[in-house]
Length: 448
Image 1 (cartoon, rainbow, N blue to C red):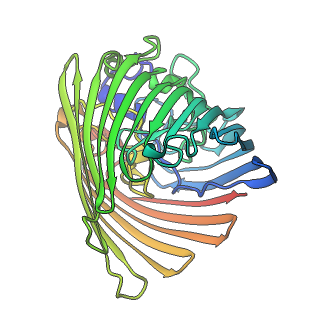
Image 2: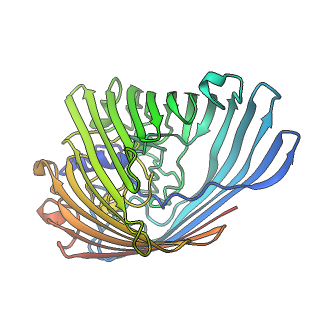
C-alpha cells in the first residue's frame, strides 16, 4: 500500500495487510477436452465463482471508508480460455495456457474497505508456455525436467510463504490506482505477471525448483523474488528447504516494510507427513528472515489424526503458529482448505492479525457424512505479541460445509463468530465496539 495514508496510528496493520486476502477452498482443476489426437491436446478452460457475504461488524484498517455497522456485498469472477499440450515424440512435450479473467464486487464492498462495490475488470490471467522432459532423463523420473515461463500461478510448499499473487484490492483511495478488479475474498487474480521456473526431479526422492518471479500487483509493491527449493519426498513424508531472495520493489508503491524486501533473505525448513503411521499427519515450518531492520521469524507445528473407525471418519487438528513482530509474510495463500494460511474467515480477511506480530492457537474438526459432503469447525485464539503495534487479540469460531453437488458444482456456506479483545477505539480494528461479530457467506463454484 502507499502509504502516507496508512502510517498513523496503525501503520503496521496496513503493512501486514499487503499479504492478507482470503480465498475459497481450492477449486478442482478441470478443463473440457476439445481435441485429442496424435499427441495434440486442446482444452477449453472455464471456472466461475460467486459469493454472497454479510458481516454484522465493520473494520478500520486505515482506509477511512468504513463506519460502524454491517456490510453486505457480493463477489464473483469467471476465468475462461484455452490450455493444451503437444507431444514431441521422444523429446518430451510442450504445454501452455491462455486465460482471461473477469471479476467484480457489488453492494457495500467488503467489511474492511478493500473494495467499495464498484469494481469491474477483465484482463489476462494465465499466459505461459512450458516443456516437460518425458522419459528423456530416467535418473530424474518421468518429466524430471519441467521448464516454464510467462504469467502463471506458483506456490512453494504448503503456501506458508508463497502461494500465488492473490491480493485483490478494489477502488479504495490509496493515492494511486491499486484496483485489480475486486473479488477480494475470492482472490480472483492469483497469477504472477512474469515468471521463469525450472523444476528438477520426480515424485519421489530428491527434487528441487529454481524460480524467478515478478509481481505487477501494486499492493505487493511489484515485488521481484528469486526462489530455490530442495526437497526429499518419501513415503514417510516430505522434508524441504526454501531460500527466497528479494531482488527489487517499486518504491513508489512500497510501504516501509515492503522497501526492506529489496535484498531481504528468507530461509525456511519445512516438513509434512505421517512418519509411516496410518491416520497421522504432522507438519511444521520454520522461517528466518534477514533484513535491514534485523532478523524476524515465523513458525508453526501441526498435528492431525483421522479416526478412521468412527462414523463419518472425522479428522481432528491442532496447530500453534507464531509470527514475530515485523515478520513479512510475503505472498502466503490458501493451500489445504479453510484455515491455511488465512487463519479465521473474519480475522484473516478483515479484522487481523495477518500473519505478523501474532501467536495463534488453532483447533479444527472435519468429517465426511457422505462422499461428496464435508462439514467442519475451526477455532482460533489470537494474541498480539507487541500490542503497541496494534492489539489484534481475539477468538473466532467458523463452521463450514463443502458440498460437491456434482462433478461441476461446489456449494460452500460459512458461518463465523468473531470476538475481538479490543474495539478500534481501544487499539483494535472493529468499529463501534467489541461485540461478537456474526459473519456469513455462501459461495458457488462451477468448473468444466
